[in-house]
Length: 147
Image (tube, one colour):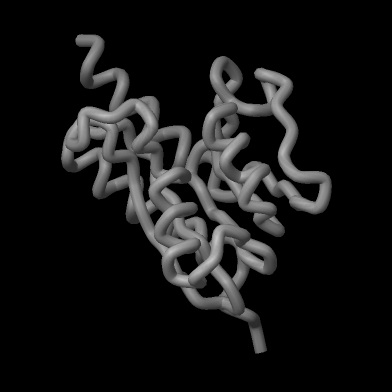
């Protein structure tokens, strides 16, 4: 029997969040935090709605997951995010000691890898999960604003 709870399964949940952001005029990044195959936090960018440059999907998910767990560390948790985290979010992920980060599309200009930011040494990173879908939504969003 196939395990439906794979990285693509949870990335689709993050893509749903990215679509919510897109529909609300936010940069379409979505994130979910998973522990034991259960989504414990879900979010999308809220920078426009909250008028807060730190209200990235990852930051919202980190806070929600920590509140759910009752502690600041996200050990044994996985973050699924549609776009490679920026260095601000990577810093927060570092401090959360999250066990795994899975992202879809790379951000060659502002992503933590390009910026040289490191995650916690125990954090596993997986990239390219549903990369095409995540990247296309982002490209569509910015193409519509640059007409």
